[in-house]
Image (cartoon, rainbow, N blue to C red; front, side, top):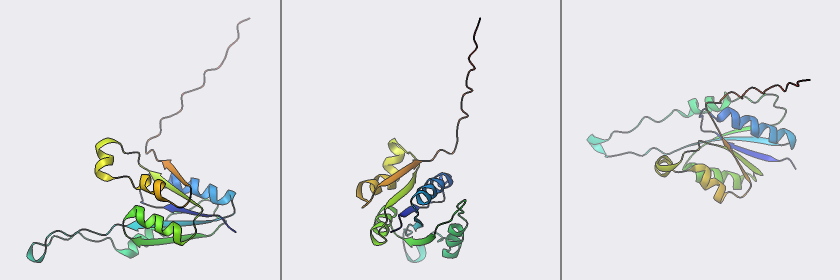
Length: 155
């Protein structure tokens, strides 16, 4: 049986790092990769004359963005899915329904007030997932490695 790896996609800057990690896991285990984007339901405020609805992203546009995600040297099946719901719940439900073996998910590493206000989808998935979850802390800025000092010998 092939290993099934789920990669939730939020189209953030760290997506490429998570894609490469998930792809290497799939390659090493002769598996399948499932890309999942969860569109959160829009909240509407007010009604009637005072309704100020937010414009919904066009489903075809989101599917095109999913299709644009390329995996280098992909010799395995890649399945792309789009759903609507609360991200953590939808990810967990998808993993259960599709017998996912591993979830690889990017995390933004928010702390303090940002985490309290934004919540942590990755944390909830880690706590409730039916399978192992690998989190990838995605850094948009990488510092260059320090040069290695050459040893010199004095004779």
